[in-house]
Structure formats: structure tokens, C-alpha cells
Amino acid sequence: TKEQSHKNQQKSPDIILSELPKERGWLSEHIHQYKGFWYATGVLQGLLALQQQHFKPKPNTVLLASYPKSGTTWLKALLFAIKNRAELDFNTHPLLSSNPHELVPHLEVYAFKHPTNPTPNTCLMHSHLAFNCLPELAYCKIVYVFRDPKDVLTSFWHFIQKSRPTELPFISLPEAFDQFTKGYSPFGPFWDHVMGYYKASLEFPKKVCFLKYEELKKDPIFNAKKLAEFLEQPFSLEEESEGIVERITELCSFEKLSNLEVNKQGTHTEFFIPTITNNVFFRQGKVGDFKNHLSDEMIEVLDEITKQKLDFDLMNT
Ligand code: A3P
Image (cartoon, rainbow, N blue to C red; front, side):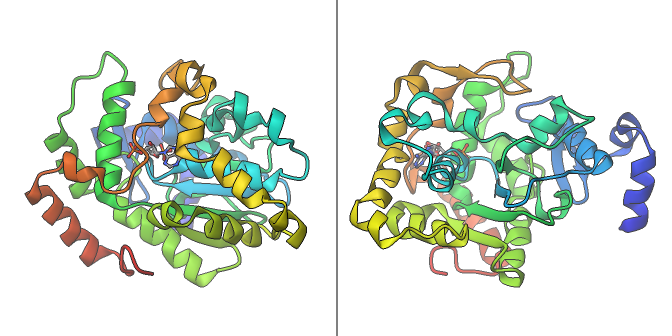
């Protein structure tokens, strides 16, 4: 509520944190429940800085939003390549030498690192925050990417194994499943995260674009065009006849990005983990790998929650 957030604005972040319910984190020791969602300690500090210091995005800012492991890396690449295409040459393209995470800043990480001036100096940024926790977004368009939660959980669990700080204990897949389904996974509950943005996309279709990883996989060209239109930078007939859309989707494809030297050998910095190897963001890039990892019972439980909680048919909207 307004009153609550006004009170919070007067309290120090440490006091707010200490008063919130907490649970075991996956990539941090704890996650804390704030406005219905579970955030790692550093994320919450970033979020509070954004709320207290007033977020001031530039006009025409585009925010990519996602639940972790839903296709963030892919969408960062696509949005960067589509939005900046007039200035970029395919032979010297920044995506050939930089990981997409270096090119598109992560809002809450940036805010955590720059708490007194928490707005990144770019027109394209990314957040894993839930819709109801985003700061004032007057100028922003939002692109949200959704993925089947069975693949999200599978992908997340593999990611934890590779990037968990060494001092944190091992977490088994059944343990991760248990937290995920009960809602207290990082940035969870997953289904509430999705529905927040889905409802916003119905209410403000010009401001919020809702995409599905599975559909993007099926038809990247159609979806790249849809994104360009949403950004009010549609591909011209000339660009289409020159094959620019295909060149962009090929450049951003899993096969291309995951085989670049920078993404095979390179590293970049994130705040939990001082250096993160770029290859942890590329595992399989497929639809349906959950079948190789989740039990039939886990699949049934996840599908049941999805049926109850999501307002749209997972694969056919
Ligand atoms: P898998 O673990 O199932 O392979 P995020 O970028 O949100 O962290 O999500 C990571 C997931 O997206 C991983 O899924 C990763 O392999 C996949 N991914 C990364 N780049 C991709 C791309 N260019 N195209 C399709 N999937 C991609």
C-alpha cells in the first residue's frame, strides 16, 4: 500500500530487511519476502535503493523483464540488436565480442552497486523484479519473456550447480522443486511473477509485450518483427529484402552465441559472484529438456499448479 511504502521510505534498508520473513536462498544465503515476492538480500537492497532514490529512465527506455532462466540472455541479444540496428555493422557487432549481459545492464544489480544514483545510463535494461515491485516506469516499454515452468526449474537447478557461491550448501533437485512449487524460489512465486506481467500486457498492450520462449523458438523471425513493431522501429521493406531480420535472428541464435569465443571462455562480473563465466548462460537452449530431469510426479504437480494459476493456455495463446 501507499502508506506502507511511505513508511518504508523512511526506514533504513537494514531495518526493512531484518523485519521481513526469510527463507533459504539458492544463490545467496537468504531470500526475503517483500510485496509478495522472494528476493535475495542484494536484490532487495537494489530494489529499495530504486524506490528511495527515484528511478529516472531516459525517454524511450525499454525494460526487458523475466523470471530467471526464461530466456533473458536471448532477449537481451535480440532487443539490443533490433533496437540499435541502424548504428551497428554485422562484421563488428558488439554481440560478437561481448556477452549480452555486458551490453544490457541488470537494473537491480546496478542499483545495488550505485544506491545513490540507481538509474543505468542506457536505453535498454533488464530486471527480474515482479511487476508490482518495479519503480516508476512512466517512459518505459516492457518486454516480458515467459517460459514453461518445467524448463525454467530444470534450467535454474543446473544454473545453481554451476554458479552457486562455494560457501553455500548443495541443493538437490527435489529441494529446489519443493521451494519452487511452494512459491519461495528467488523472484518467486513464479506463477505470480508471470501473471503480474501478463495482466499488465492485457491492460496496456502498447506498453507491455508478452512473449513466450517456446514460440520464439518456433518462429524467431516472426517474433523479431513483432518486437521491432512493439519498439516502434518496424523493419522496413528494404531491410526485409536485404535479409536483416534473418541476420539478426541468426546472430542471436543459441548456436551462434554459444559458440563465440567470448561466450565459451569469457567472464563478466555480477554482484553475488565476483566473476561469472559466460558459458553458464548457455546450456541446451531447447524446449522440453525437463523430461530428462523431472520425475513424472514433479511434472504432474507443476502442470496442475500452472493450470490453476495461469490465465492462459501455456502453449496456445
Ligand atoms: P537451458 O538451461 O534450458 O538450456 P536466462 O538467459 O534467462 O538465464 O535463461 C537461460 C536459458 O536460456 C538456458 O536454458 C539457456 O541455454 C537458454 N538460452 C541462452 N541463450 C539462448 C539463445 N540464444 N536461444 C535460445 N535459448 C537460449
